[in-house]
Image 1 (cartoon, helix red, strand yellow):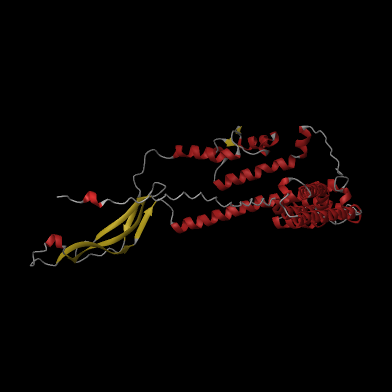
Image 2 (cartoon, one colour; image 1 turned 30 degrees about the vertical axis):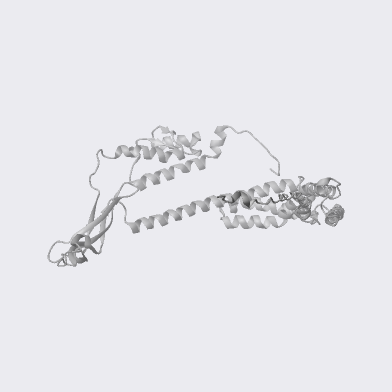
Length: 415
């Protein structure tokens, strides 16, 4: 009540007196149900109620007085269908009906005055039901085939070169008419379309309720934050009074003529309020995110400049010009963030920010992508200088032994 939470106590007797006109309406639909079913109160064996509203004692008394029978409340709406499926088989007669279906093969004509041979393809589908897939006529045809030399013999010159063979040939498909306990295919397709329409209708109901809840949540949440909450400094004072009035009007509409509106209407109402409320929320989020993004940018700048100016051995192989380019880029980023923050500090909180957290994160990513390949450049492999192999000293040539004169006289034969 006027943005204040209030509470009060009321006795049940007083409440039932105030709600008497509403509670008395319950008998009308009960009479209508019996009339539509062609039944009377005496035909009812038991009464089962489900739902939260049926727990009201005054409502139970009305139902009890109408039927004159005790009321049972052992079911909930989720279990009701399962209980019915459990109880329904009890009403089915015992035993199994042997009749599966009637399958008729049409347009079967005699072949040469005799009964035609028909082949039928049947199978059990995934549901365990016998179905006839197709049927076709098979005709016996005599064909001539070449005789294999192994059978006739290569030396038997009088053996015939061909022989007559009887073969079964498929002549054509036949129409199959199935009469089973299942529904006709066209009716199944029609029912499937209706089911899809019901699914779409149910989804629309859920989406409509979600759109209504989103509008209601935005009204309550934004109004409390703008009117003295965390958003109070982020809305233009010239817009604040009108915006709160728009939120109040939307709330009144929502609980009056807008209670049964469509999804598109709720969405449009929310979009109208977000024209002012959206930027206010965004400015607050940016004010919260900017300091963190700026701190991360400065930490990255300090880290990269420290590595680029380091005298460590792992960076010694990087050319000075490339390391200086990192220092220069980091210095530019440092100057950029300082100038932007100085300008932002002079802005009102409800004014459009001159810098966003996304721009700061992009600036950080730019210097990281620029500096990382340079700082991670691998050291060049050391150049291996091949030393010429020392030639081994030449082995001295063997000295020729002095020639000995051959004494031919020793070889002479003496008589």
